[in-house]
Structure formats: C-alpha cells, structure tokens
Image 1 (cartoon, rainbow over the protein chains, first blue to last red):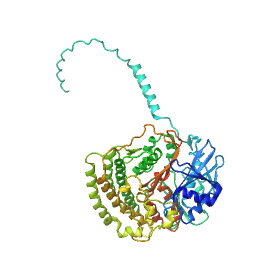
Image 2: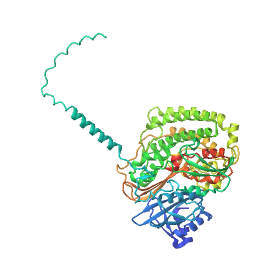
Image 3: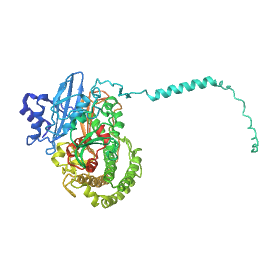
Image 4: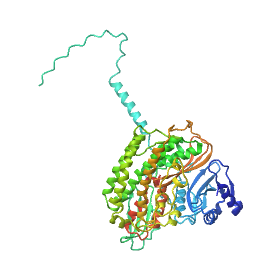
Length: 207
Length: 379
C-alpha cells in the first residue's frame, strides 16, 4: 500500500484523531492525537493487510518556537513492505505521551532514550529511567535550550581550547627571547663582493 | 545516591549480584551488566550502558552537513563505511542529488570489503570469548589485508571518511582492481579453511548450538536487524528487498538461519550467518569490479549545502543490520535534528529478556553472537 492509501484507511478508522498528511516534501508524515496513539499503533499492527510489525524508529524533535516536543514513530511492515511515519505533539513544559511498549517491545529502549535526552515522560512504561546518561544528570541534552552545567561530580566537561594555551606559551617564549637577545640589525643593502673561502683549518690533534 | 538500576533487583533473597564489566574482555568496549545469579545459572542480566556516550546527535546539530561526515566514522568504528554511506544517502535525499554510477559502485565495493572486515572481527572475537584464542589471529591477519586495500583506496584504515555527499572522495587507484581480486581469491579458500578450523569444531558447536534462542517473532518484536534478524530465520535484507545505490545490479545469496546445528535462532545460527555473509560479500565485490562503469565519482553538489525544509530517512544494511539516519532540515546550513538508529542499541534491549536461565558463561556467547559494539550502542 502506498502512504496515501495507508493514511486514508487510518483516517477512515480514527477520524479526527488523525491529522492530514504533510505536504509531500520528501518523507511525508501524519500527526495524530497523543491520547489515542496506543490504540492507533495496535490497530496498525493487527489489522490484516497493514500489519506494521516493525517499530523501526522512535525519536523526538524539540520545537521551542511552537512550544512542543514531537515524538516521531517510524513504522514498517516486513510482509507488505510499506511504511508510515506518525508524529505526536506534546506540551514542552510537561511532555507526556502514553507508551507503545505494549505494542512493540522495541519501543521500550527507544522510549527510554527519548526520556533521557528529551525529558518526555511515557505513561505506563515499565522501566522508565535514564539509559545513556547517569541517573543524577541534570537536564535533557537534545533539548534546544539545554545549557551544559560545565561538569559532573567535579569532572569538568568544558576545557580551554589547548591551541589558545599553546599560543599563549609561544608568545611568552618569544618575548623572553627578544629580551635576552635583541634581534640583529637588518643587513646592509649593498653586499660586498664574495671573497674566496678561507682554506680549512687543519684538524686539531686529539687529546 | 542510589543507582536506579538497583531498584529493579530484589535484595532480600539468597542470590548473588555480580558486576560483569565495564572492564571485561568480552564486552568489546565498555559496557556493564548487573548479573543476578543463583550459582552458575543466571536469573537475569541487566545491561547498563552509556559509558561511550558522546552525544553525536547533538554534534550533528552543531556542525554543518558536510562537517558531520567524519563524526559518523566514530559511530561504529568497526564498520565505519556504512555509517558514512547512510549519512551521505540521507543528505542526498534531502538535496535530491543524483549520485554518479561509478560512485555508487565504489560505495558498494568499499562497503562490502568493510563488511568482510567487520564480520572477521565479529567471528574472531566470538571464538576468543568462547575460549578458542587461535582463530582470532587468523581473522585479524585477513582483516589486515582488507585494511591495506581500503587504505590504498582512501588513505585510512579505521575511520575512513571516504564517502561524500554526492559521491566518494577518490577514484580507485591503478592496479587496485587486481589487488582486490587477488585478495578475494585467497579469501574464498580461507573461508573454507575457517569452517574446518572453527565453525564445525565439535566443542565450538556444543558451546553455541541451542544456546540463547531468539525466535523469529521475538526478533521482529524487539527490533533486531541484520544478521541477528536473519539468524532468527527472517528472510530480510535491505540490499535485496529495499535496494539502494548499486545493489539492484548484483545477484547474491542472503543467508538465513534455519538451525544449522541446533535450533533456529540460536547463537550458532547468528554466528554462521555472518560467516556465510562474508562469502556473499566476496561475490558482490567481484560482480561490482566486473561491471563498474567509467565516469565521474562526484556529483555536482553546491559548496554550501542548504537543503529545503523537510525531513528524510535513509537506511543502509550495515554489518550490524539496518542503520537509519533521520534528518530534519529547517532550511539552514545546519541540520535541525540528526537521528541515528543503530542495530546494536536495540540488540542490547533484548539481552535482559533472553538472559533468564542461561549459564553465566553463555551470557558471553549471547553478547558475542549479537555482535554488540559499544560505541554504536551509546553514540
């Protein structure tokens, strides 16, 4: 089935909960209502002829201008070789989306990653804790307004550019050399005619 | 503070809690397992990852489109070519650039050589983890030859940075085709030797057959991809089923596990699928070298890469399965969002549910057979 056909069937089944398909930019997507995402996903997985058995990707995008976090679902069917992209919008200050862990087990770890890096809470998730960052990390790094705290338990995460430091040392060294031995005066413009090289002195006898 | 992972464990029983890793030779990088054991039998192994997290997705938002290419090498440094290709395909999809035929063939050749190199590491270290140290030396010897070939092609041995948005960086040097063919001639005999040396060794089979069985339904449900999915009996390969680049022009077998020496989906199936895939890759490289057309290796790409607003996803069949790049552009020179979906991350997710009832020594076989690479897990 093409994406348009899939979208029409989804629209016929769920009506208002499914938004229009985005303009066919490159990969089109449909935005659906957050509180019905589990129902929609289960229907997509179980309906004969659609059978989206592979939750290919589950991630999020932060949009501070629109004040939403979008959770993006890339679904695919191995049997029918068609795919669909769904999006769910949630409030930025208190992002909460129901979990689809009960539909695809793959969503378990991907939702944990979204929770870790975007701070989206998934209601009903059996094991929602940080996965890539330590438990006591402050903030969610993939948010657009994330500010790095500058360290973690005394381990600095920011440092001076080593090139800046090396350049400073270079300048000090050059200044000291100039102080010790002032640069020689520029050579005279008219060079004297080259004199024949002096014969080499005989080697000193070894002691 | 209390680690949240400990809340998952019932501390009031007789079972022992063992830290497996982060510095354990079989973890291939840095990852940690909390293993609850009752004697030799595991009750559960809970993975604790993130030791190699570098937030590459955030870096992708900070550097420009071409600037992220060297970083993709670091996503999976055992098979960096695929990460290059996937990212290049995603940006090309956003830009709607057509890649020249010769570049597509060179991409296929370099990727298949890289697949051989990556699978050699996988099967070699798997033998070491099980306790057979010798085969790794043979595997590394062959990998060195592949590395020499790739070095002649692009100048690097590990982090290649060979693919570019719109093509590849260099055409192949003169005489390179004969070098590759000479290598493949010996390599095909070495694969036979490898089967004699290791694959059908009775002790090896006993360690792997019927161990850590993942059924086909489980593999699909947990999002396993690549050799892990095919090892569970699912006949699916992106190169054949959703072809990209030059792959429609090649004929090759897709090895699928069917219980070669035990049950379908056991550790031996996942191992042996990789061995057979190396043979398939060798065939693809031969066909590609035969059919490669003349022409340019780079398309005309604007110097400032500034795609239209929109989003695109591109997939490649990496050595560790499907690798997908999801890019969102807002019309500027930097990507608004870069998402990398890797096979190893989802493979880690299945370990906790497969581990109950396994012996502790078989956990090593499970991890090795899933071919988990820590930097790809953590990104």
